[in-house]
Image (cartoon, one colour):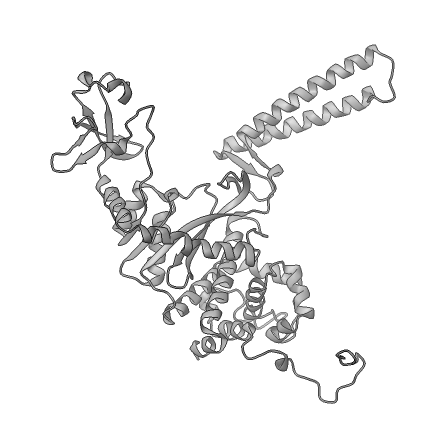
Length: 476
């Protein structure tokens, strides 16, 4: 028995096969084609959506958009790799009608159409909402660090510059000592010459000059660090003892029903503390919900952010983090607030009464003080203050206590957060290999993130509904 034989390369076919015959009816590329064709690109803001009467005809923005959506869906993001795919990939040939734009045209399209590309993600969200793929009741919010196109060696903080300056001073001192010895002793062929040592000293001094310029640049800008390759990227702690990375903080809100991404944002803030209300309210608007429940981890815990959520008809679920004991055996949580009498009861059964109101870190707070602390047997273990133990209470702290009670009453809802929001991040970073950026600058990485999130949602929805059903759901 022989082997399966293919067609000979020189075989002449009288009736050539059409490209369409190579594309199955359920191929995802058919939905990409139909979805982009259904969009009105001019209102979305795409450049050259209407060609000029004079000059060389441009590529239709719809064709370049199709190319990018296909690329991000298939782990091909580089403009040079997309250029090659257009020349050899049958699916791309079918999608673009055998057009083969060069890599600069492809790259310029992504650079020049950031806002319209982000609008395309929102258009697909509207379509998914029409198909009732969003539950619109519970959303999880989380952030993850995506590596920037900037190495650690080209990122500088004030502490790093200080360490580098100290090391440079030690090197200069060592080279000068070696230079003095070289003058006193006979020349050793294995040791650097005086001229070589002098060159090393000048090189280190030039580095010190660069460090001084970077320090001056930080002082002028007020920033705590500077990145040379991507100026907007920042060194961030990755968590779980994984060290630091020069990265961006990618925020997403994910609907609980099918784990579809509702909204996304990219920031260069190193933590999530100021992101909750903006992400939650934007998710509510995207879902067109009258109210929305949101779960997030304790990294988002911020009194002002929680109040903003509640004011925006968003109900947050988050456990209250434990406060520091401040060398006391009695944590703040052990002091029970009595709303009826407006006082705190300490573990020893004594009342802490309102002393005065003030402002603390921009928030209006009340200070409660224990008047009987001086006679308390455990005062030395509770506080070192001569005037007794003091408890600070935000005037809107009742909102935080209500939220904590909600989270305690429905622990399963809080536990859902991981299964909802970490699924997209795991898929994007591992399966899709898009946990790092190719572009530079906050605006560019936001565009790239929109393409990644659109690709994730496309992949998910096509598995839920199928290509043919999605094409049928598009407006005609």
